[in-house]
Length: 104
Picture 1 (tube, rainbow, N blue to C red):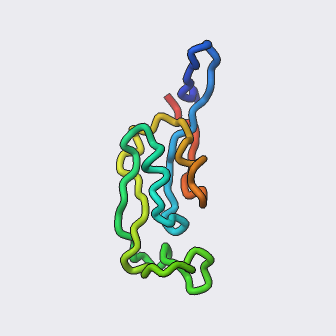
Picture 2 (cartoon, helix red, strand yellow):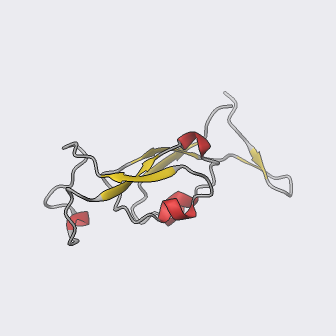
């Protein structure tokens, strides 16, 4: 299977890793990924009330003064617009995103 390959201005080939998933259970809604993304890949949404994605009382991320019932988190609004730069992963304090090369 042939993967998508990019080329630098100097002609060097590289394989971009595109965002494939965003773990909202780890997301703190800081918006860093949204701010650094050169495309329209992310959007801010209400935290899911799904019990499997909710914070536990013992969770280290639950030490702020905000109610988890009204918390906002990032979501993938258009993952097909991702260019595979990986900037979102590098700025995310909790590494909430998964990235992978994609076939042509």
